[in-house]
Image 1 (cartoon, helix red, strand yellow):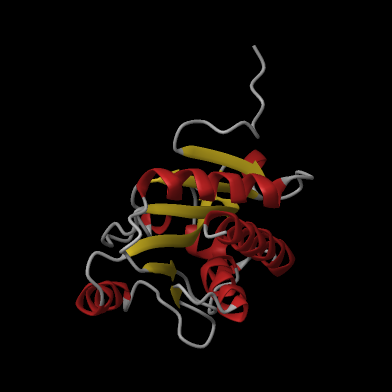
Image 2: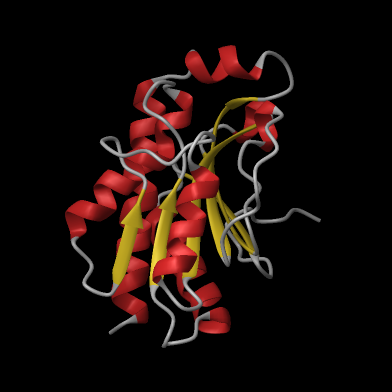
Length: 190
């Protein structure tokens, strides 16, 4: 039996950015998870993880920049090119979020590494993200749900792989993810 990779599986959606309906698929997954887990009293915080010092790891801050430009009135975006959230400050930022907000609804966005055939795939899944897992960093899990983009191949010399990731791919993925989130926000809060 052939499985359509664009069909929503419970709490785990994957779509390639080259799919003609990638933005709509991301929005649909975004709305589905929000509708099942979001409490209207909770402030939404996008936690876009990564650094602009590594091309492959810049997916989160690029998405953060793009979401900040949208200016959603009912959300907060942390992690952008000017003020990245990365391994060195993640714990402090998460603590600050919990100090500022009662029961924040955190949506984590980050780059990931995977198999070569999955490069360019965006994953949306319910539950927390384990940032830094691909480069053997022990960081706290974050998020009520998460969005990751497979930017390059994992398994060997991950730091070098992230440094040598094509910016063109990362920019396209950031654009697709931010457009999907934007459409999902409009649909959910309409």
